[in-house]
Image 1 (cartoon, rainbow, N blue to C red):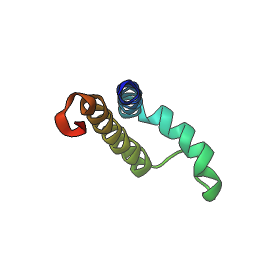
Image 2 (image 1 turned 90 degrees about the horizontal axis):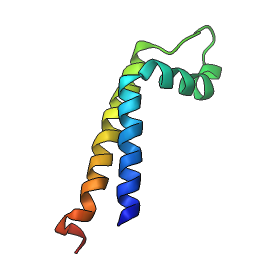
Image 3 (image 1 turned 90 degrees about the vertical axis):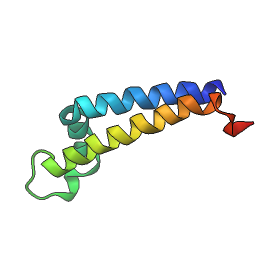
Image 4 (image 1 turned 30 degrees about the vertical axis):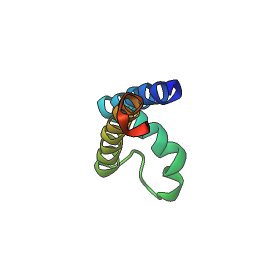
Length: 76
């Protein structure tokens, strides 16, 4: 029960930080996972940054669900 709450809080924090600072986090993940696939690009595209923002929103929603799940009657 408590692990869901802790993981939910972590997911919300990561999602909010990814949504609010996408250039920082998208730049790091882009350099590690995608830059080697690109020939001439030196920074992530606007679509990649938008995708990271959407991922942040999904992370926040998932985190909120994980936080609220132990308090619902669904697990009973």
